[in-house]
Length: 209
Image (cartoon, rainbow, N blue to C red; front, top):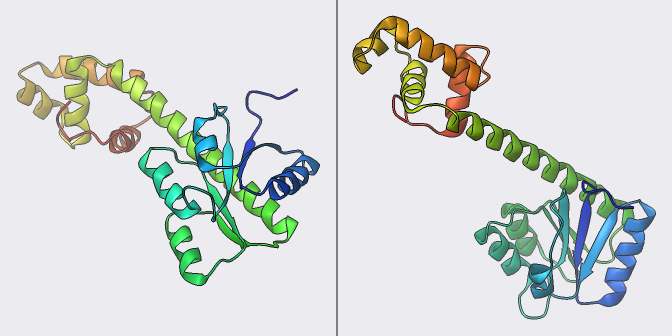
């Protein structure tokens, strides 16, 4: 039975024997996989929302792997890629790695090298997903703030004191303290430094909503 969080390795290669060989290797390592003969098939597929990576052949019908890597990035599909090729060269490898590839393996490659690269890629995707989840939680906390609380938060992280914020907003210092307390609680911040880090992650303009 496949868990909703079971990592999936996607294999895109137009040689069925290569796909079968890689999938057999992955099965022996208890890794779930799906294979596709073309980049278009991969794009059309309904992929599970789980940690994943892509084992991608450089020479594909229709679009080559390097162009497909760029298309995925342009389309907002950020999946770690491991390239495999029967005829790689240094410029090709450098281009792939500069564009974020995890590994570039030339056929015939060592099974363990591929497995190592896949585990590295899956770890990278898990880390990315955690960061995205944390950011989504942070954004949700920020959206729970009132308009005034957002104003206070912006001024607090800009380094202003309560009395300066009170003057800036035309409210009493006690009211500022109340709003500031609400901000700290709603943002789940333990300290001013915490709040500053959160503001930085949210890329909020200082002193403004």
